[in-house]
Image 1 (cartoon, rainbow, N blue to C red):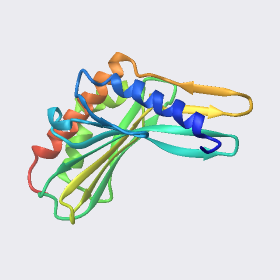
Image 2 (image 1 turned 60 degrees about the vertical axis):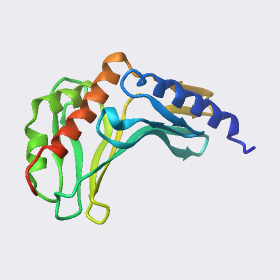
Image 3 (image 1 turned 120 degrees about the vertical axis):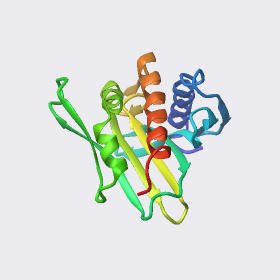
Image 4 (image 1 turned 90 degrees about the horizontal axis):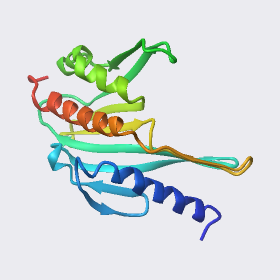
Length: 190
């Protein structure tokens, strides 16, 4: 066992606690030490997982809660990446949600003009929402990092912090996934 084994175990327990909050939307199919796989068929996605991305600090660790999922698609004709960005005041309700990409596509335009996606992204602050298309795999790979579920441990001063999602955040996260799937599947050729 390494020096961080006890901290890792606490983090994995927190991962399980947070993931269990989503069982009413989609059941868990398998659990490993640092990855929970859900049955994404209810949402129309493949390989729906919740996991931690680990950041080592000098006297601590940060475990970033991350959703990943994939969706097959043969419509795009090139690799592309679409990212969510925020603009405006951080402490107010005047955040502007924008999806950006190097390639102009109808999907990008639809994402930026949809009021429901705007509302869902405002209900849960995301560090990252990234849609990446691989022409070789004919697959969308989506990564979402919400502001809930992270586990932070610092040695000095001794701090351990984790935040479970609110019910409204679980609902908004699942609805955002559904809406993204809907936009990817139901669009014109690109």
